[in-house]
View 1 (cartoon, rainbow, N blue to C red):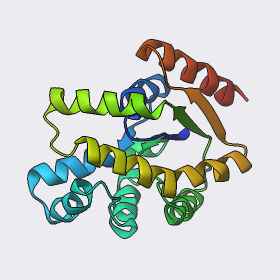
View 2 (cartoon, rainbow, N blue to C red):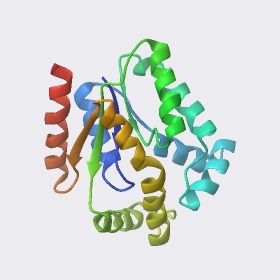
View 3 (cartoon, rainbow, N blue to C red):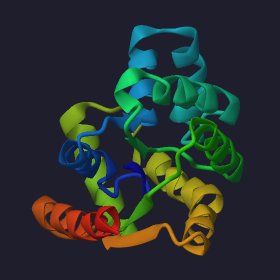
View 4 (spheres, rainbow, N blue to C red):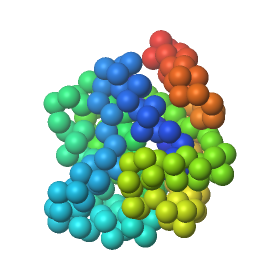
Length: 191
């Protein structure tokens, strides 16, 4: 399975990605995790990415595209993968199309978690306290929501038009959301 999980920052993508990856025995590839690892290690990519992340902006496509291309070329992703945090822009959709087409495969499904915006702010502020994430202030969280609405929400229509979109209610207990996702994706994998 070659999957994408989408939704606004704080919708629970990272949490659900772990369960989906385990269920389908594919790697969960999170651009956010890769960026945070580079930031904590002080790599040149991390320094560049941190400037954008601290402002609640997206890291430039050329940096992100290269990172994703390198990751999906690794041996554990040959039989499939789950992308979390990519693509976020139309240019990234086109880049990903080329990456997957080059391997002779296709994208199987795009899952979108829908969550109330105020609930997202509450979730992210709690996460910031628990995990000590300095980049999760209320202003930055709200800016990320604006950027998502401007740049990423339009991609949902593209995947809907391609017949790949699965919308899942991201509200409720984690296990309930996970079951909704499994039910929808199992139907895709059986068809």
